[in-house]
Length: 252
Ligand SMILES: NC(=O)c1ccc[n+]([C@@H]2O[C@H](COP(=O)([O-])OP(=O)(O)OC[C@H]3O[C@@H](n4cnc5c(N)ncnc54)[C@H](O)[C@@H]3O)[C@@H](O)[C@H]2O)c1
Image 1: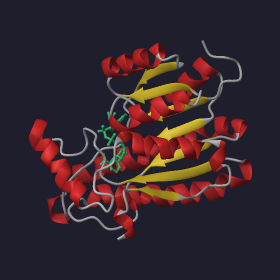
Image 2: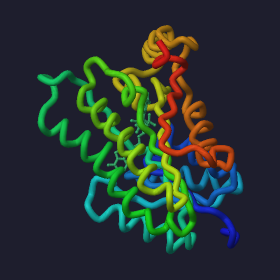
Image 3: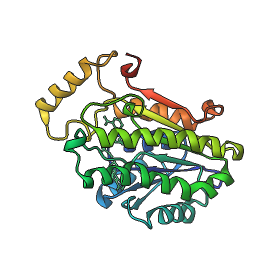
Image 4: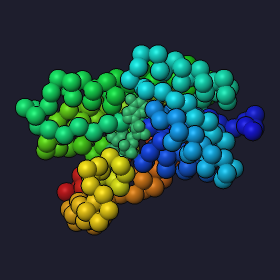
């Protein structure tokens, strides 16, 4: 049961990886959650696990690249919780390839899911955030901040998310809405080394980790904790920031 003063957070891409961990962190902070993802069975299982820990949560199934998705997500949050205080734009897809290895379809998919869907949901949620003086956190990438070899469309989509973060922060600061981005480095989720399993995958992640100043790839919790901080009162004076959470990779 929601209590009448409980704040509501929408977390997209919550059926996996970083999104699931962000949901856990925000739930532990006392926010009620609307988890958004494409996979109903996985989403329902995550909601049940959160509820077992006393967290108020509901799953809303949506493919965010569909035109009617943002309005339906906002309606679901308002119908369920009566308010929206936080939007975590975490859903994303990865595609590999330099320019000549990137098809039109791959380019369009990166822009549709990583950028257009994020923009359209952020826009749809603004009236509710205006009422709550709420917060948006975009999960971008360290490749939003520096060039990436062999991941052109993905890196361009994430760099655009960084610029959207700054611009929306400026546009909506007068309304008390804060907009920031977290820029993760390699993080141990299904997105990383998806073609490998077991010891082969562990070896690949260790290789990736060896290139990181802090000597390992991130855990989803490393990313979720910084996201939860950006939402909290501790970050009340932060907007328009792009925070690398990358073990020092972009300091190099
Ligand atoms: N894992 C990494 O190394 C890493 C590094 C930097 C940034 N990121 C970013 O972190 C975010 C989370 O990724 P992750 O690592 O947890 O990967 P993941 O693949 O485990 O999770 C991505 C989530 O987004 C969802 N999603 C994708 N397309 C969607 C759509 N059209 N509609 C609704 N949901 C959709 C997926 O279903 C999944 O739940 C992504 O934006 C990703 O780009 C990840």
